[in-house]
Length: 118
Image (cartoon, rainbow, N blue to C red; front, side):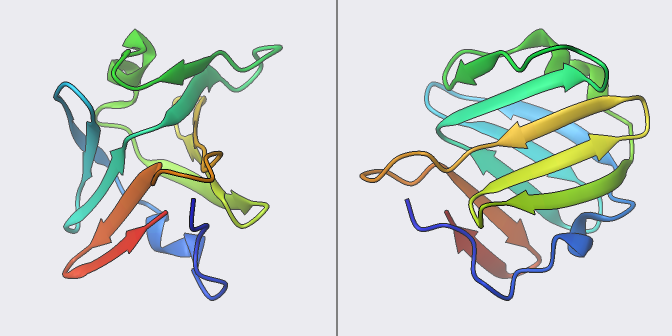
C-alpha cells in the first residue's frame, strides 16, 4: 500500500538469521536476530533459488517452506520497485514479500524501535 521509504537500505538485513516463525489468524511473524521482525499480512512467496516459478501464498495460508529457512542467514537482500523485499538465504531459499494492494498494508518491518509499514 505505502511502499518502502525511498531511503530504505536493504543492507540492514545482511547476515540476519531467522530465529523463529510465528503464525496467527491474519499474520506471519518472522523473528530475526538483532531485534528485527518482518510481519507479513498480505502475499509472499518462498522458493528454492533454482525453482522455475514463484508460488504466491496469501496470509493466513502458510507455506511449509518457511520452516526451511529457520536458523539460516540472509546473504542477499534487495528491493524491487520500491515495494517488494526479496531475501536470499544461505541454504538457497528466496523469500519475497509483496506490497501489491492499494487499500491495505501488506507487511511491516521492525528494526529495534523503528517500524516501517508497507
